[in-house]
Length: 354
Image (cartoon, rainbow, N blue to C red; front, top):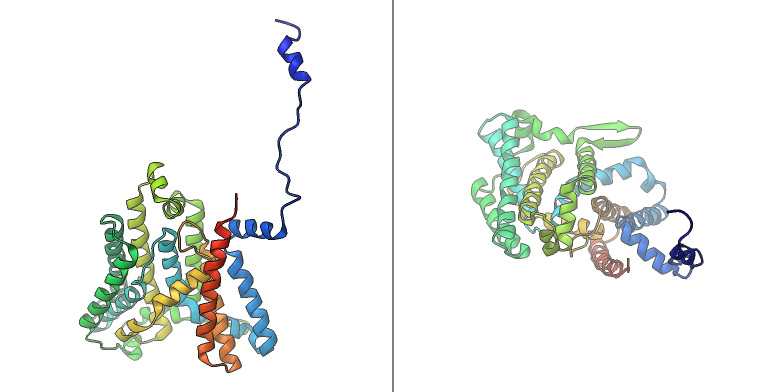
């Protein structure tokens, strides 16, 4: 059939304008809201940079020295690794109050197997990692299969693991010299090297590499997308074919293994292995780094890079206030305000219309 048909002639005269959304009327505040919604790690990074500038101006060149800045990284290495484990769990809209004592009991087991029982250090480390993974699997089973609230489950396991730690170890500290003599591999992450005046330990390198690997996994693998989906809306994730139970089990188990890895790093950092360090607020420090880092407590939103920035921010505040000779309670107060501000900003960002 040749020639133009009647309906084609009608279409030729019709309006060909395409509907579009104008952005000229969008306010600067709204643009900022959209930017922060798409880049959750931006807030802690901006606050971190501002904090470094403020303390640098107040203290002077000493604070900006590479030695001071790398010392901050050394101090936050353990908390940064624990924060990475906590991030995985919070992304699923859960929380793990036992992550700190999992780290401590893993360190105690590594030390006892290597030093007290005389087993090869590699085997001792492997047993410690398996212990951490088993603790995480226990939490994950109760949350994913038994459908118990994560807060209650991990509060209970915190008490169980804490008591087990003291009963097993008889609260006996393994000395630094004994570790050096019988299991020097446990001090691996204490090794350091210089880059100019900067001193970096293998513990710092391990923290950065771990965060980088987890960032890639969370952003570029199916498992990572499933973690975000389960945290955002578990029912919708289940209807879309995601095996939510397996995702939760894997997340809690991996978090336990990472906590055990933090134990190995902490042995290098502290030298000795003390069961009584279980009373230290490692849980609170990890949660603080995660929340300040922009990870939403409601799940499904945030970047693990933000957790690293959050841990660095707490480290910068602690170092800056110490160098200024301020009362340590100022650090506690500022941390509290940062946590409240982080949650408030998260609520504001979540209201963005996309």
